[in-house]
Image 1 (cartoon, rainbow, N blue to C red):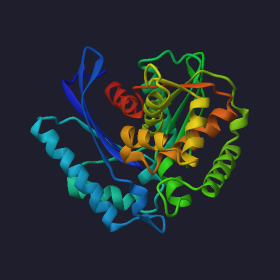
Image 2: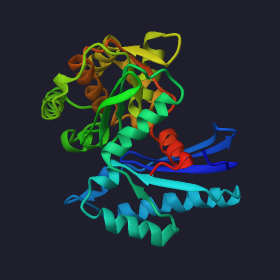
Image 3: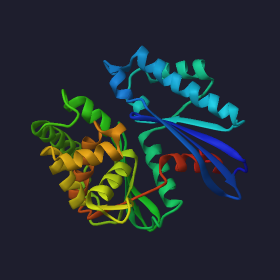
Length: 304
């Protein structure tokens, strides 16, 4: 592993652009600072291309992050892009515009590479010998199945909390009942396309990504759990049902715990609910490490 004092990871996703600053010493990685900007890149896509306004907004966030890093004298910067850039037709143009506007060379990683990084991140702090891992992002969902410490299956599906909201929810923050039916139908269709039914059932599952972290925070507050690190499929089901009934208490909790995800949280939880039902997963353990930590470890260990 490379020896450096401080470095930064910038993760350009469909929903957010995140920057984490780490200290690396003796093979130990400690997160010092985290910043995020809810850009919602899918909202700036027209005809499968990121618009001029979307490109400018992305560059503006990255310039702000670079200013922060320069003030902290951090030169090791590892920016990468996921589904938000991966799924658009003008990705090469966007990457070049970012390079011209910020001097940052963004690594556009594949869905498979994203899944690999998620596994490396989770396995760096948890026992991931035999388990499943799910990462629900704004524009994609990754599933990893691990047996005897090795990845047996990994897939990246083009469904996420933001693109489902963008495609199926028209006039309100929360989906209507008919919109929920359409979202669930689409999720099930994608799961069938990727043969999810052939995956092993009943595994211990770790969850990664903003939608799952927010689900843990909502469940902790709403059900008065001990912490936000674990929640069950029944918690997910009840939260979704109460959102559909416009329960004022669940709406209050969501506004408190995830105000910046209020419009995308329900689609994200619908993805999670369908996955848990299909794979017979009783509960989710929320991982504090994921794609960013895994990507950093690959960089530090010289994995291409």
